[in-house]
Image 1 (tube, one colour):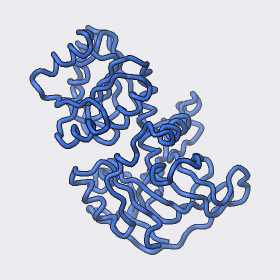
Image 2 (tube, rainbow, N blue to C red; image 1 turned 30 degrees about the vertical axis):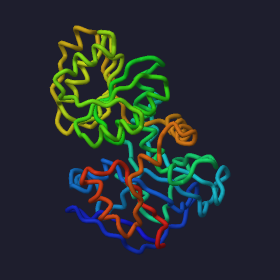
Image 3 (cartoon, helix red, strand yellow; image 1 turned 45 degrees about the vertical axis):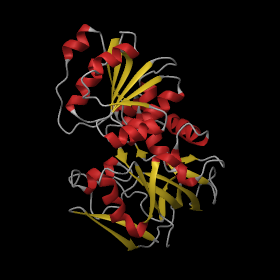
Image 4 (cartoon, rainbow, N blue to C red; image 1 turned 90 degrees about the vertical axis):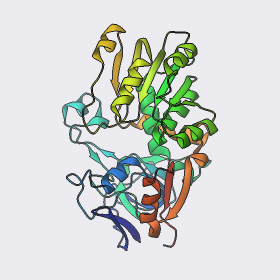
Length: 340
């Protein structure tokens, strides 16, 4: 088998490795595709070196088939097509006991805290498996994890049909949130600085504007009949994005914080007070979000083919990271079986 490993200092390598046989309640997967995401780039840049043990096999956006099953497996068989919800919780912390296992106080994120899917053969617990329908291609299914993020964000926002929804940040997750919100019947507006990303959003039939435009407030006022948006998703990770999100909201609007801010940003609490706004955090996903994501990918509500910029083999993982780092790509997949 082959595996791509992060060695630290912005260095990646592809090596030959021995697959691990599945133990009790485990399966071994033939990984078909693995997506590279923003978190992988953060790791690559060294921003998570205190957390990641090197050499590290990255990757948590994936699809594949079961190649072998361990002792005690009854619900899964060799040949089953699956994706993975890459969360492992302890089951004993206050969050888990309250039913919020996905935000366990001691959460293990697979592909960050433990070896991930950027390898041709991967052994995991049966507990993380999500079944894929026959009509969904394995290439498209590799977008299940980021789509599940968007589904969770939209569900946390309680988006309803007919509502005005602003998405601040038109990267992969922002575009996915826009697509999921649109599937729920919302009227969506994407705010994005990059000309290329605005053009991409518009190619998907989404309305997209520059958040620094002088007439933005009047445009939003006209669009919402002077009320403001019912919900805003902050996906930019910038302090200006928080301010733009808050300013766009109607009385009793909901602000959903999706992006991870590297430093605590200033927040206009007066506006929160004056308009009785609700601030909502949205982190990762639950199993139901993953299942909904698979459904949206299967029925075409998520334009997976258009979102995928390129597919590269494991041997070109360094080039794939460089392409994504350049900002010219939306989603890059690694074909983990190519050349194996």
